[in-house]
Structure formats: structure tokens, C-alpha cells
Image 1 (cartoon, rainbow, N blue to C red):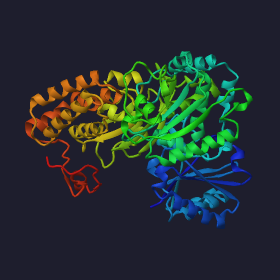
Image 2 (cartoon, one colour; image 1 turned 45 degrees about the horizontal axis):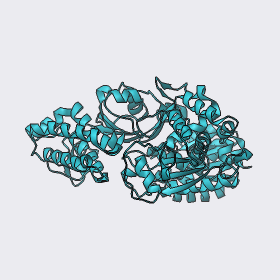
Image 3 (tube, rainbow, N blue to C red; image 1 turned 90 degrees about the vertical axis):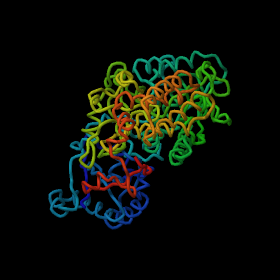
Image 4 (cartoon, rainbow, N blue to C red; image 1 turned 120 degrees about the vertical axis):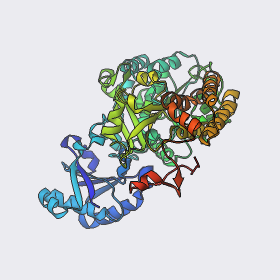
Length: 578
């Protein structure tokens, strides 16, 4: 099988300082998804190969650029060009990659003949997964060393903070407000407005918290951004602290993501040593510091009031609001809470201006958003596009559509808090207003593609099983109601349902959404309500005919439909008789 390689345009060249006096720079993807594909072994093999071909080369571990379907990714750059990105590199073919690049630099045509059938070279600008993106937050993810503050500065890092410190806090908030930036972790609350609430709150101590407790199934955009460029998040938090008057911050990281926490900790120490954190930042009389704290791993830890209790050392249990964290948050003090991606946009706004930022987006949804593509789609990974991008463009043009000759009948957006969108609505844009009109929220941006081989009743049960297990149990509607709906769904799947069950599920779901204490319970019914709304016929078939149109009966962990097509694939659900 040949290696696919992509030639970058000259416009995507890197600053000469990133070569650190060398002629060749070799960047090996070394994020969590890369390491799962033996990136550490690839790094060792590349290093050995370089000794013979290019001893003057610089070898750097970088993050994943979002093309997770093509890991391990190795980009090799020569000062002044060319820049070639190699996909699906493994320990066996790693020496071939070095050999091809060395030959190509000397003789591009000769390299084409020598490696015909071994290396397929394309232009990266002609790869839809990459070329159809609007990469701002992810622009340098996968290209700079996440452990080097110098490399971050070389590509424009900390320009935003320097500009912010020349402005008043009120001016910074005004600039963020004019940009139209909205929170990238849930329902899209205006960021500038939240910052103003905290700024106007009275208190001798204020805090800034970055919610990095990314727990939605199919969502990994925050992990990818932090592992590839942690300094951007730290800079965003520092700007926010200056704007709201805080001098201490915390990054709340899910414990299952140790590499994310480790790289953040390293970046914080680097920034502190270089005067971008700590006392008297950049000699401007402003002080701010950050600590990393690990979550207990529960999904409810992502709810901001539960997260505050966890940071304080208590059990992660939500509390009633008001008071809101902006007035009474961590240890009873005014607290600003935003998620990773929200903070990542802030340095870009302060470096380039609110007008530049708002050139992308649609309506009240400005800027870009990182979405994660997973499920029944050819090209899985993280994609940054302008808000308002049609769903079909993301799923078909960028993601490549469904594999194995099936068709995508729906997407699940927003994880356990989101809902199912049928294919007939794929002309809708991915923005806050459009998704709200369909009865769901964007959430963190995880998108799971569902094909004909997926049963919507089964999907609804899967997400409900997740939220039921993750409920903290503090309030009766969530604790009792979700279990009752889950049991009713299980009866339907096992052929024991009746027509009244559908209305019962809807009634209980509405009560849970209206009366639950926190966001987990209020949004947990979304997947089941949207599934019934848009795919009621599949529920009726289970109830009236004891039949599943998706034919999801499993034998020995394989999809029988795929076997009949000669393309068997592992099925990740537990076999169930239908």
C-alpha cells in the first residue's frame, strides 16, 4: 500500500526561526491519537533514518493537525521549501519517507519516477478535508513544538496579550464583545457579556477558570488544541484575567487526559519563567498565575457549579443558580468560567481586531468552530470551519461521506446534551440559531455520523445510558426520571413496548428538562426527544412489528450487512437479540 503525501503551498511556509539554524525540520505527530498509532516508535525510526540521510535535520514532536484518520502524520520541511506532509506513517515505512523527501529536494521528477507506486504525492490544497477548512485556532497545531514558548512566539503568540495590556480592561471587554465571540462549550452565551458581569462584580479576589473537562462521546477538540498549542489557551486566560480583574486561574482537566494536563503544566512553567505569567507580567503591573487541577472523571464535573466544588476539594455536585459563578463562584468569589476553545479565540481577537474576527461566521454566530467528526464517516478527525457552514459540506465534502457504500441518515450533534438531525436537514448551517430551531444545542461540537446500519432507538438508548450513569443523583427528576425512560426504551428494544410508551417518554422527558437542577438533567432528554421527533417510524416498527429496519443484529461482533457486502467491520455495540 502506497504512502499518501501532500505538498503544501508556499504560502504555508514556516518562519525561518523555527528551523533553529538547521536546514531540515521534521515534525512527527505526537498527540494522544498519534501515540495510539505507535508515534513514539515512528519517532525513533525517523531519527535513525535521519542519521544516514539528513544529519543536519531538526526532529520535533508536534500535536495532531486534525487529520486523525491519517495518523501517524510526519511533515518534513526544508528551509525555503518544499513542505511535504506524509500520512499513515508507521515504523516500517518511516525510512521510505525520509528517502522520498531527500530525493524530491534534489529532483522532483526523478523522485516521482523512483517512488512510483510507493509514494503518491498530491497537493494539500486539493485535499478537501484540509483545504475546505478555515483554520484559525488550529492554524499551527501540528506544526509547532507544544513545549516551546519560543516557537509559539515565532508564529505570533503573545501579540494579543501585549496589545491587551496597552488597553484598559473595559476596552478589552468591548473588543471581545464587538467580535461576536460566544462560548464554545454549550449554548453559546456571549463571551464579552459574561466577562462584563465578572468585571462589574464586587470582590477583593476574582478567579478565571478554564473548563477542560471534555467528556462528550465523540468530542476531542479541546484535547487536540491543548496538546498541539497549550500556550494559546494560557494567553487567552491571561487576557481574560486582565479584563475581569482576576489574579488567579485554574485549568480543570479531565483526569483521563494526562498528556493534556502534562503539556499545560509545562507551558505554564515556561510562561512563568519568561514573564508571561506570575508577578508583574511584561512589566505592566499586572499579576496573574495559573494552576492545573485534575477532575474526578465524572461527566457532571463539566457543569460549572459542580466543577467549582471539585476545585474546592468537595464532591462534584451541582448547586442551584442564582447566584451565578460570575457573582459568587469559587470559594464564594466572582469567577469567570470559559472552556478551552473559547479562550483559544481570545488571543486572535486581540492580535488582529474584532473586525477581522467577525468577517467569518453567520448572523449572530461569528468566527470559526472546531467540530469533531466520528462514527460512520470516511475521514474522522477535528475540523475548523466558519460558523454557519452547511452540515452537508462538513459531512460529505470534508468528511467524505459514509463508508462501505452505505448512506448517512443522520448526525448526532452535541453529545449527550444534543440531538439527532436527519439528512433532510443537512442544508442547515452549523450555527447556534439554526441548531436551536431544530430543537438542539451545539454543545462542544462533537458530531457522530449515523448510517443506515444504525438504529435510532439503539442510539437514543446509548446516550441515555451514558447520562443515567453519569447523573450525580442530587435531584429526583434526573435520578429517577432518566432510569424510568431508560427502562422503557429497553422494553421497546426487546419487543416488549407499547404505543403508550412513546407518549410516556415524551412527558417524562419534558418534566426532567424543566425541573432538573443542572444542565446535565435539563439536556439529557434531547437525544431521545429528537430521535422520536424525526425518527418516530423506527420506534413504531419496534413496537408494532418487533422489527428493526437497521438490521443491527450482531454475530461474533461483526455487522452482517457489511459481511454480505464483503466489507466486514467490527461492531462496537454489545450483541442484542431483536
